[in-house]
Image (cartoon, each protein chain N blue to C red):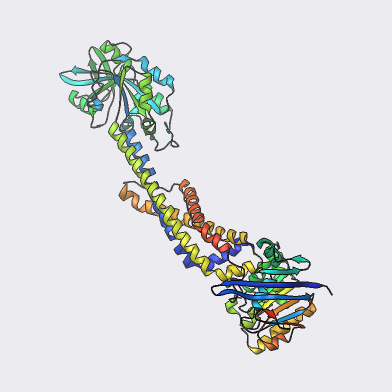
Length: 224
Length: 405
């Protein structure tokens, strides 16, 4: 199976008062299409920095990130925005929903970016909300939904543009164990059934066990 | 979902902030609309009053005294009647009507009165106060507009002019109220002036001027009575106030170099000064609202952008480019400006409607063109005030919504 994402010797440094700090240091690996990757490590080990770099939200200081044959490390802001719009879905610990939009409006936002007209947005968003079991809650605002339901809206938003890869940052961090299991099983389901690659940062060993590829970071370096 | 809907949803979410953000601009626009409404209507009212006084420019011979505007032509030297043609053929802008006159003091039955020869067609237009006497039964519109766009309205009924000529025959006369009283005559009576018998067509209403002691007859009849053929002692001109301020008098002097040309200077200059003052106040307020409104909107946008940092981060994360974030915020600013302009206009109209009768003694009607200007100014200020916050917001990192790295 071909690599969807190849990381070669990437480093991310920050200039601090007491010298240069390495958030990532000479990290290399390759991910195949359809992998479910869990990234673990202690706090400050560089997990989230790695996720940001791979998803085009920040640029590495050095090294290469190659997504489906295209280099991301030197891409412009506009190119990175285009990459995220077309290929990437995000699921965040804090759900990252826009509070004054209903569930369906939140899901429609990425569709509007990709040029879908309003009627198409309605149909596609309703379908994906049905997929995550929220068809009856589509006109509810985030504040009217439980934490688990909000995270499912976020997953629906991540799925609606049929992305190649979903980046998840502590997706169960704000959920109780029962809801955590529900969300993880759902992520596993879309990974297997829709063949969408998932890269998930987590502190939870239980959540990390859902991944078929495990990456452990310590002090910005790979530990496995 | 589209950018406009996204902006609209966000505006609806923060109504209180929206109101406080556009408050300064709304109040500023309201005040300026109120001042402009009152000043424009006031200028029109002054122009109408000026017309009701009669002609506002008088052409006199060089030797004439101008101590008393209304009596300046009495016993003045004469000049050729042909000067009227010179003015007419020059096609000067702002000359609404001409009234050549020949005036002399006369003695009738021991009463010292003033005999004035007029060409009634023109005299009608330059003495609209007579219109209200019931003689001609119609009212003139204001000839002086407050701005170049307000051109002379002229007569509502052009037939009025012919009617006036028909009504004052070669042997007819009009007589001032005081003169009629002193001669003890009424309409239909006949009076004899230097051997010429004239029939009184109408006793004029009281004006409070020297006109009350005048007997008006046809110019050519008076020229014959006084044996001053083809000569006049004055030409009254109804000149547009704006044309006067634009140098109409100088142009008239060029055409008639051997004459003395005067105006109801104080009235005209007072009006011009008032107009200038109102315009200056409007300009000062405009400058103030540009600064205060711009700062107010800018301040609101800064606060809004910082408050929405996480939300902007979400949009950037999903794939919105910097330009779209900039566009979203500028679109929001334009909508705020539009709302501020419309509400400001409505507030200004209401203020003018309430205060107009107290400040200017007139009722103020809305001036629709001010709505367009209100919106243009308000949107412009709002956009200018939002440029920096929008630029700043567009540079938010797309991970602003996430936990600290």
